[in-house]
Image (tube, rainbow, N blue to C red; front, side, top):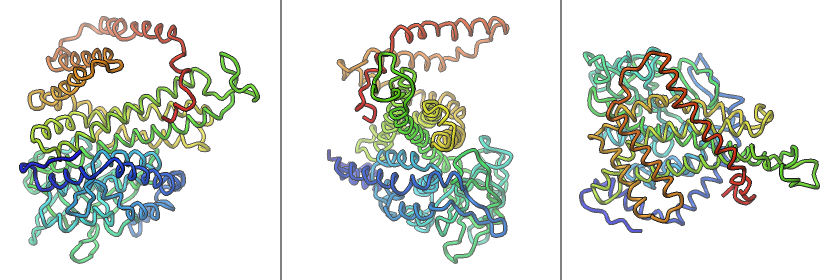
Length: 540
C-alpha cells in the first residue's frame, strides 16, 4: 500500500509516512526473524546469570557493574541497529513503524527483561527530547542516544514522593552560562549508573526558584553523566542500588545530583507535559513487558506439559507404551494452558492495535484520521499498561502452576518470570493509577471524545462484518462497556451507601452468589473445548 503524503503534515511525519510505506511485508518479516534470532541466541543466554549475579555497586567510585555477558549482548544489540528501529530519521533512526518495535519489544522482554530495560528507557528519552528539546539539545544528544552509544534515564521519584510529584524537592538554580545547577536525590532510577555505555543522559524533574509548589511548578532538565563539550564528569552520582525481588540485572539506582549541570527541556514550569511524552511511551513498553514474560511462561509451561508424565487420561491411555500420559491430556492442565494462550493472543492483539494507532497518529495523510488515532492511543495507553501487566503476571503464575513443584524451584525459569514480572504492575504508575487516569481523566477528556472514538471503531467493525465469528458476543460485550462507561459518567456510584450490613448483603447477592451460574455452566459444558486442541495447534 502506498501512502500519499499531504502538505499539512510536518516534515518528520511526512518522512516517517514515506518510510513506513517502504516497510513491505517481506521487510517486516525479515526484521522479525532477525529479532527472534537475536533474542534467542544473544539475549536469552544472559538472563539466568543476570538474575543470579545481579549488578554490583562500588561505593568508592559510585560505579555499577552489570552482570557478566550484559555488556557484550548490549554491544551486539547496538551494532544490529535495534536501538534505532523506529527512531527519528534525521538523527540516524530507521523510522520504521512503532508497531514493529512493539513486536521486537515483546521478544526482548521475553528473553531478558533486565537487559531490555537499558535501551527501553533510552527510547523514551529520545521521544521526549525530540518533541520538546531545543535544536541545540537535539543536535548534542539525539544521534548518540538513537545509535545506542549513550543511554537515557527518567528521574522522577524521590524518597518522599512518587505519584504526587508536586512534592519533589530537587532544585534547579540558574547558572550564568544558561545552564542550571541541579541539587537533589532521586530513587528507583532504572539504568541510573552502569557500564554498558560511556555516557548516561538523565532527564530530571526539578523546580526553579520561586516555582509553584505543585505539579505546575515542575520543569524538566537534561543532565548528562559526562559533559559533552568538555568530557568533564558531572556531579550526578549513584548513591547505591536497590535490593529487589526481581529484574536483578537492571541497575535500579539512588541518584544524587550535587550541583550537576543541566539544561532546560521545553518551557519552564512545563516539565510534566514534556515528561509525559516519555512516561506514556514507557507505559506502553511496560505493557509489552507483561506480555513478553507471559509468553515465555506459556512456552515453558507448554513444553513441560507435553513432556511430563503423570497419571492416565480420563478417557483412556494416550501414551500406552509409557508409564503414564503427559500431563497435557488432563483437563485442568489444558484449562491453564488455554487461559495463557488465549489471553496472550488477546493482549498481543490489543497492543499491536494500539501500536498501529500510534503509527497512524503521526503518519496518516489525513489530519482527522491522525486525530482519531491519537484519541485511541491516549485512551488505550493506561489500558495496555494495566491489563497486560495484570494478566501477564497472572499468566506467569499460571505457568508456574502447570509445572507444580518444579515451577517453584530455580531449576526452571518460571519462578524468575513471576518475580521479574511483578514490578510491571507497579512502576511507571501503579495499575491503580492507570485506572484513575482512565476513569478520572481519559473518559471525560474532550467531552468524552476519546471513548466515543473507540465505540465508533467497534460499531464500524460490527456493521462491516455481519458474518464475523462470535459477533453477537462482541456486540454484547460492547453494550456492557457502554453501560459501564455511562454509569461512571453520570456519577451513580457516588450515591450515599446504606448501613454496612445491608451493603455487605447486597455485595454478596450481586457479586458472589451469581457465580453459581457460570460455575454450573463451566461444569456442565465439559472439557471438549480444551481437549479438541490438536497437538499442532498449541504453537499456532
